Length: 313
Image (cartoon, rainbow, N blue to C red):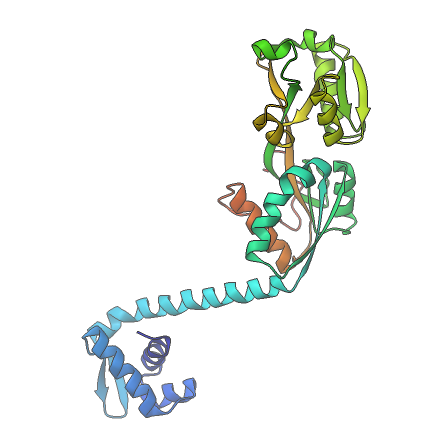
């Protein structure tokens, strides 16, 4: 069964006339008759009653017509999807992300995106979450990936919660039990990074709520530098779990649970400036994010509704 046969059948059913159907399809009447005859032989049913100058669907033809129309509609949708993919493949995408996201999370996202849209030119900018939000607001970038922040001009949807975990050198006393109280943490030299980052602010908040003053020994400018210091046994740290997978696997660092069962999470979201319409490449990138993070309803930014909360609602 071929596309041309279905088109000939549907058009003839609509027109009630083979000659008129052939004219609409820009083929000869004998060609149209041949297509329909072949379709009837494949189905084993007569689809039309020939009525002199016109035709009329048989009961079998009436039964088959909605299925043929549905098949053509699905093919049309498939063609549109492919055309959209080709348009996306010709685009350029500006993506901004928090530094931790850019280093430890974005590579997986880009791998999936490039596999589907290899022709898209993706430009990456990194910064603090507040800086990424401003770049989205200013329309300097199309998409932001950072801490979930709200702004009336920006659509925000939470993708995942990044767990911030306490880590030590494997020979540290905490590693013997794998558990420490927040009071014990306060007595240890603490190594943190980027005083203005979301992670630094979050750890300060946790310590304040626990009523302790952390003994901050060093503040470095990168997660990688922080990890190297902890690996040398120069202190302990709170780090994003996504940033220490390799070190944990190689047993160069050890994750320590807090005794009260307290866990610290930082919501990470996708942000897009609200607009009447969006570039195809942006929508394609959002589709990849939806697949990676299990957003069954898909990700489509609105144009006017109030900014969603950090929960993505």
